[in-house]
Length: 502
Image (cartoon, rainbow, N blue to C red; front, side, top):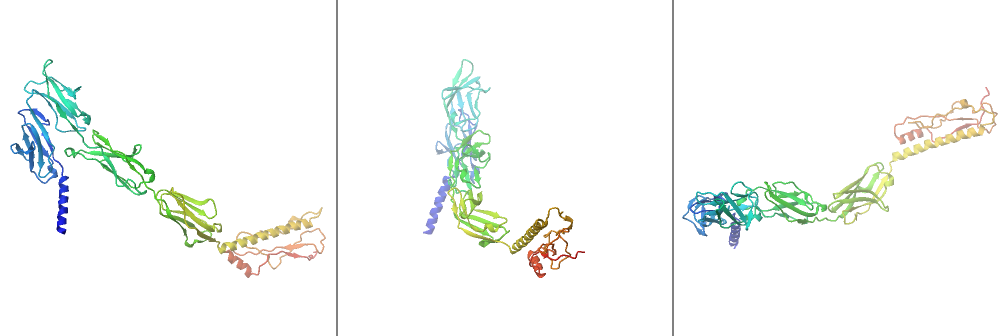
């Protein structure tokens, strides 16, 4: 049973190959299908390069011809009729209808004329007497002939040049001969191309392969063609080139539209374009939106870098990613790009960034929200101690300023001059890289005023002493040094005694 099935498959494949074998083509020398009786025409069967044989079979009026002169793939014909050839088991060629005429004047036409070919018609007279002029007619209409010779030459034939032809040949002004009608059919060099796409509704972001398909006849299989691709209002997608395919690496939804292609010969003698093919690019909506935090866990310290990553599992095309803080109207960041993943970076975070966050993604079908994540930002201990030290120094400035203002107001009397030179000015209480305090051992005291009679309750002497500790850059270490020296209170030492009058 299996063997029988295999034989059936092989027979089907063989039959398919047989039906697709190329057809041989006949060429003529001279190239005319009409000659005078007594002349000969050499027929050549072309297509041996497609077969592994040199055997040719000739047919005359649908019968195998054995009486003619045969040499390899040529046959010498000398009688009117239809001729065909076959190479081994190839299909039969198209028939060539030869006419060996007895008339005085004949119109000689070529056997095979394709679009873009030069069409040559020749009005010929039998015998030694030659024609001095000739007129040609197409479907009964006279054709003007700009050629200086007797032949009619149409440089680039088109399908419109098909029809009935005849000629009038003139021996002199008074004598002319009329030929028989000859039918000429201009053959199509190649049909209008057809634009094909593997998928006319591709998914956005995927590649698309376009092919501009047409076919040359076997007689002109070696005619070079070039192709061009375009979209909608002649948006050119490629330059003219020999490739009949166009690869679009990535197609987007805005590339949807009507596509077409054109084909022409390198000599520009034949040009045809395809019908338009609509390509509708499909966009996949975003789904399964998620948010990720770096560093993981949502725990971070002030001054660090925080990265919020928004991603989707599905979704094509241009996507807008937005990051939001819960219970706020405005987004904290937004990016639009052709990607399934986007990042928002906060380079220097603060405790104020603590909160709940989420992201959304939208590629035209409406935003899709991720889950909500918590982000906690904590301050560093070192920075808190530094803030305490700065606050202490600032408080000392305020205390000193209040004391001086009070002294100035309390003892300033009318007529008494303020002894600026007798005032002992304390140095800056917080110079750079120093911490200051009141020393426990009083230094020499100076009178505040020199020309007053103070009472016992009056403030008369004060002194502020300064100590300096080297700063090693750590606020905690500096505070410990102060504590080791027993300095824990910032104060002013007020003396109530009067100095010796001397």
